[in-house]
Amino acid sequence: MLFACIHLPDFPVQAALRADASVQVSFQNNAVAVLDGPESLLKVFSCNEPARCAGIAIGMTKLQAETCPAVVLLKRIAEQEEAAQAALLECVYDFSPRVESTCPGTVIVDLTGAGRLFGSPHGMGQQIAARATACGFTGNVGIAGNPDVSLHAARGFAGITVIAEGEEAQRLASLPVEVLQPSPEMLDTLDSWGIRTFKALAGLPSIPLTQRLGQPGLHLQRLAGGAVRRELVLTEPATSFQESVELEEAVDLLEPLGFVLNRLLGELMTRLQARSLATDHVQVDLGLEVHRDRQIQAELPSDREASPKASSHQRALKMPVPTQDAKVLLKLLQLDMAAHPPPAPVKKIMVEVFPARVRLTQAGLFQPLAPEPAKLEITLARLRAAVGEQENVANHPRKPKPGFPETPAQARVGFPLVMDSHRPDSFQVLPSSAEETGNSNDRETRGREEAGEGLPAPQFVLRWFRPPLAAQVEVECGPPGNETSHSRGKPAAVIFNGMKAKVIQACGPWRSSGSWWDQAGQWQREEWDVALNLNGASGLYRIFRDARSEAWFVEGMYD
Image (cartoon, rainbow, N blue to C red; front, side, top):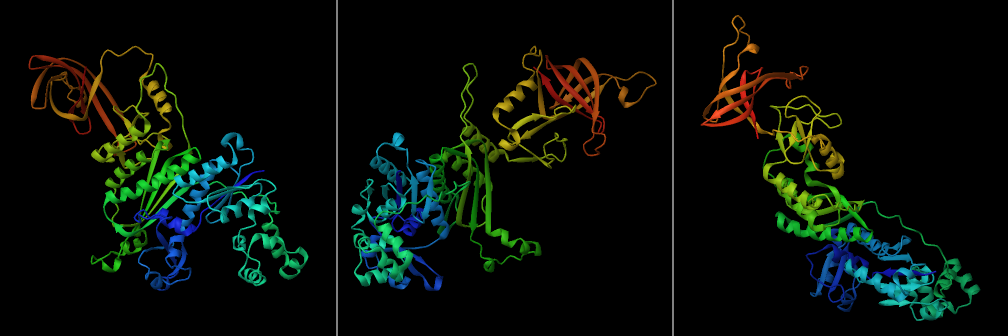
């Protein structure tokens, strides 16, 4: 059996320093104290060793602590400590899935059988300490044959401590009894007896000790001798990963906001990589600084009802392929924030990523190289920022394909999908999210099927004009006695783009209609393929007449 414990001294201080990037101080070299309590009576809750040397003590008021000019004062935030504890757990999940979250700032991991992967116990301790340092922590590591001995070694000794089997009582003998964290009453009793070390407590007779202190006193004596054996209380792995920060001053520019997002995303990606995971869904919740008593604009009743929601700004980012690249996510969030900026200065930032398995793909030897999914997503985001996300299709609605929701607007950037309709040029643009488009292999297969791969190549390719060009068409007279609009003669000349072209030859008409049940989406048209003479050059075009508006259009040209 082999267990390792990593303990972070003065954990509230380390959690506050990790979350506040604006404080450029070191945990080991600078004096830092954390305040807690109501705003009117803030007191020192925790401090590091340099702060204790400077005269800071637990329980001091804020005014008393401010008398030490070299001490940095930070406010305690519970969310920051929870995020730091979760990050500490992710540090040791890379070594074993059997992990116990003993208390804030202390984690025990079962390393039984891990020697073949990570080497000697001292080497494993060095790797655990290096992993914690990479996450921004400064901790002590204790390794022993049972969990409690490793816990007390990490609490009592600095650096990396390895205790061999059978040497527990000897190695722990010099530690003070405060490391056992007894109750204040029991600690006063032991101090009155002159018991101040593990060795002195372990040397007391068990029966008289039990008569005076009860079973808790006997349990402390067994802990001091390293004789307690227990099972770990395993911690369930996190299903989501969150990092948050509360800023001292509100930020109203995107550039400093991106700096904070970069640090939060980097910490989240480090935690995901430790678990061999990636993410395809990022959610950002921005807490806004809103002073409603300073607003002079008159609010409508509907605005007053929605006022609680105006204090936050949420944005979600979905990727078609999971990624571990923090730079890609940062660029996508910056483009999204530029398109949808927060309506007020940002006071608090919370970033949550949802884990997903890393998707590994192998390119084929006989297939052309495709762009990386992350780079393609950035390109699509830049296109959306340049041309807009959606266009209004009220004037030319299309019936959506079954399985896709009907929306009043259509995306401008995405993947085109041909609709199951006989209407010419009927298609839909789908976003690149995995929930709606599926993976790239499905799109590629569907594209090959729709393109008719394996069929003979067409002789002509029609280049569509979007939107179609308005035109005027001169037609020949129809047969005598029949003056209906559907029996007009062939087109004789076409006028479009300020030019008049004579029709050399015309084929048609081909009449089609559809959506007769929908008054807004009903369509009826008459198509012709015509060869035109344009300034001595000939070209083949497709023209059509809208039977409802009696207007002519040039739909495209053949190559």
